[in-house]
Length: 86
Image 1: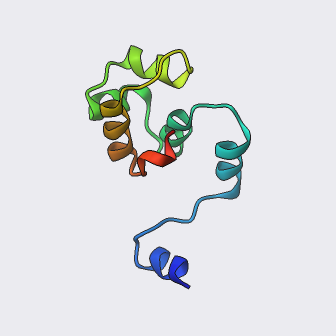
Image 2 (image 1 turned 90 degrees about the vertical axis):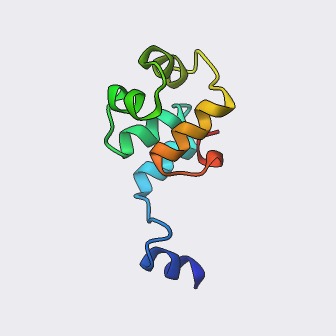
């Protein structure tokens, strides 16, 4: 069981089912859901990614598409693959 070994070795994490359901079943921004899961405020995420807080707000409310560089920066700070955010 590679998945179990990855979790035990700290190479992967086990996500709560309610969080996974939100990712799959809602239209909420994946960036917003991951930010909240990581317990970061928009201000903290803006500071860590060097992305303007207004831009993050527009991205999270699906009013603006992030650039590729922004997705890379967000995925790095949130500790997820780019695929997890798009």
